[in-house]
Amino acid sequence: MVKIAVLVSGGGTNLQALIDAQSRGEIPEGKLSLVVASKPGIYSLERAQKAGIPAVVLRKKDFDTQEAYDAALIQTLEDAGIGLVVMAGFLTIIGEQVIRKFENRILNIHPSLIPSFCGEGFYGLRVHEAALKRGVKVTGATVHFVNEICDGGPIVFQKAVAVEDGDTPESLQLRVMQQAEWKILPRAVALFCEGRLSIKDGIVSVKD
Ligand code: GRF
View 1 (cartoon, protein in one colour):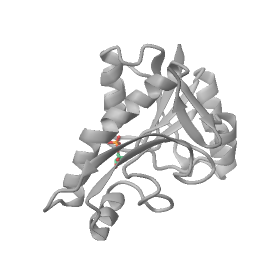
View 2 (cartoon, rainbow, N blue to C red):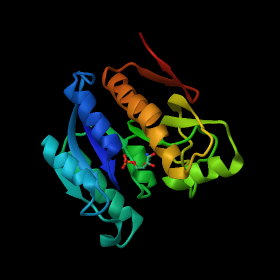
View 3 (tube, rainbow, N blue to C red):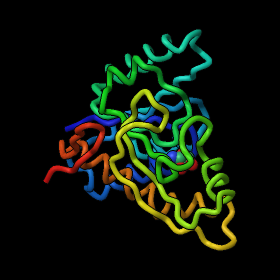
View 4 (cartoon, rainbow, N blue to C red):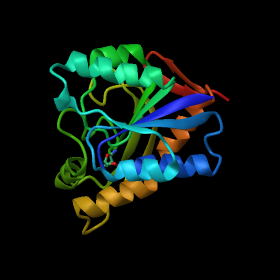
């Protein structure tokens, strides 16, 4: 059984998708074991409490350096016996130490079809604003492993979503969440926990 930690910074709809998938028995080899919030008072913490998942708040500003924050995060994850870290709407930068310690065991959900509209500064509504400004007809979401390059790790799953006439960043974000994020993230987590994701030369394949 792989113990899963979910790192959150906001409303937690992706966390909820994982909770609901677990309730439906869709993550048989994984257990949501910890929620790490980047700040207090976010709705993600309500969702964790309702689901009976232990939660901690780890605020970057409480640490003098990136290294001190990374060490605290690593300690928190190791104390909980975490085998998979899922960044779900998490906005705090994690440092090299964390990435090395949990190499190929950190998944992130990004609300675009990487390599479009990703990297530094592309998060939340900004991603959808950029997609609408560019006039793309198709966008979507990507689940990828986290490495030292922002949104640059090996891609696990992607799902396309149509941009519709009259879309606002908010309407597009909701559609991408509903039709893509909330589907591909639980699926990727389940397959990881079943040991069915392999990476070769930066390319992810799903083992039968
Ligand atoms: C959303 O923009 C989502 O696309 C991205 O993080 C933001 C908040 O997600 N992954 P959540 O509702 O907190 O899961």
